[in-house]
Length: 505
Image (cartoon, rainbow, N blue to C red):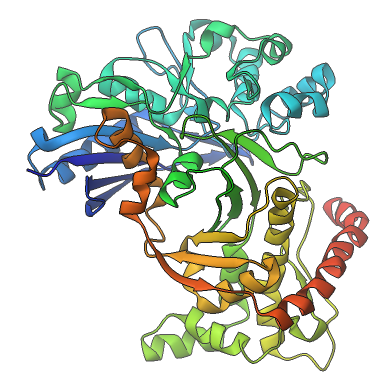
């Protein structure tokens, strides 16, 4: 009788539940959507009851496929950097402030004044920012004191659902590392940061390895979800670190790139990668003993989508008539332009930028445009600009941990033209996996398997995924890109003052 593993990924737009068997085969998947309340320009909240309803709905749908008694374990991944205050009985006291909520700017400024940006980065591996949990908790104390006074725990999304499933409250190291209050040097809550933040340290839940069994499905949760009472539940991890497992990034020096609307380069390492310019960040990995350094850019696939929607209307119309993806026709057009796009550079900062710029005022730009340029050059320049920016992230990491290949996943990894461009710009091997968009759920499922003893180690991920294709760098193209990359860097810095002026308009 086969055994199964159930993964839930509590995402921004919905919960994705995925059922795998222990041979690595995906049996079924179910997504249940919910809403985000965006208001006051940069506030963003979700109702935790919606998370629970989505988990119950999707669990029941998937368990109709199997005997629930054959389920070995459950694990969750989830959106990180949130702030959900709950009472002593686990009852939510207000909606959750999710990762993109930016209301806690004054609190971030206070931490900067109290500790200093560099010292703070050395403790947690992240910049001080309103995006993180501890800054949001500070905001709660200052602006909703009655709610703060009633708070017994601050939880992230997957930790709240774990409580609903088991009645137990804890977090894992990866989600703890997304709070901006977790010391990555000791894997303990930072007394220095908590004291500067002025919050009660008892509000931060116990932090434990992702592979610990938190508890078992309670009778109440069994009735709500269809899961069998007593089924083990692993603590699980944050979505980014679970995705690292799902792409096979489970050993030191393994690097991967996620290419979606936003994109990142990340790897597994045994120590934090401390960038003196604080351009990259460090998370705890769900794999015990490892960290998950990453650098994330804002508009990678989004730049490509903008290109499709605004400049490639002819390709969109032709693709609809032919019944193919417009990106196939855009890629064919890009092939008409040589590496370097005939001297045309695109800065892909269409929504500010995180790594490596950390400049919310940054803007996009075509630089070097002449009457001699063709549409094909513009199309190529957009993808090259995104890839140059990602290459800066890769180079930061390669200065600390050498690697000769990057495994790519995500929707943007489907195109062979872009994968070859990555190989040439990064000047290293690019590997595409056979599964591109299940990494997060797969990582959570493997975590469940390791936690329950079904799998001996995370190396079992090789049973779930395999390399589908490989691209080696072309020497001539790589040389051309090496000449252009310094100009790309210089172009951004030349426009920094212009960005500041535009922001004042």
